[in-house]
Length: 313
Ligand code: CP
Image (tube, rainbow, N blue to C red; front, side, top):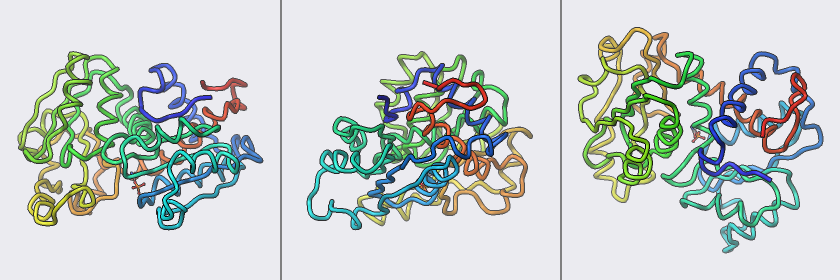
């Protein structure tokens, strides 16, 4: 039985197969509408979510299955002190697969040690968000045609941005990718990403503060929200939240085919005028979220693809 807790839980070859299946699902969703008949997904969300929770549920419904779960720890027996380990054991009796979001780093990993069904990390604190990574890879591949030889700029809250940590972890596996980390000093990319991911892979990276100076160098721009919920005091959040705001004027400095990605939700860091620019790729990411999660459910439940007759993992 396999889980997805960290993007590196899948080999490069397995990741590519999941992306290929998601592409096939996007092309012909009707082919897959009954492959998970009788299966159930439990969405255990101890933190708020719109896209991830609803797209997991929509994905399972679109495969013919059903969904159950809770949105917010206060709806669960966590309020009475039930542990993640016991919750995982209990929910394994009711569902065939679990998607868990939790504010504590490592909670989905702990759940996977006690569950008797596959567990998917749907975001753990500021640590990892591997399903968002698959979405980001699918979107980059659609826009650029490849996942190597790219100069990628990550901008905003790189300290708490779990989608950034996971995507860097995955992109270093492809040759000749280079990284610019654009952030204020207080929200720099964590040392562990540099020491454990970038340096061992001999990846070129640069930490900078100016979005305007960096934009012309980039093949991809990945914007992020400054995450209010992870700050210890409101004053720091207010001081940092509008450090980077992407508007049409700044976008004029970028290459004409440089996609703008953002995991969403956004606050003010991308003004709504940018949405009309063909480079805006963040609503493509939203749509791809459903296809990726359909592919992932099929992969972890070992459901064969009706088009190839083969399972992904
Ligand atoms: N991208 C993402 O994780 O969005 P939600 O927080 O709405 O799930």
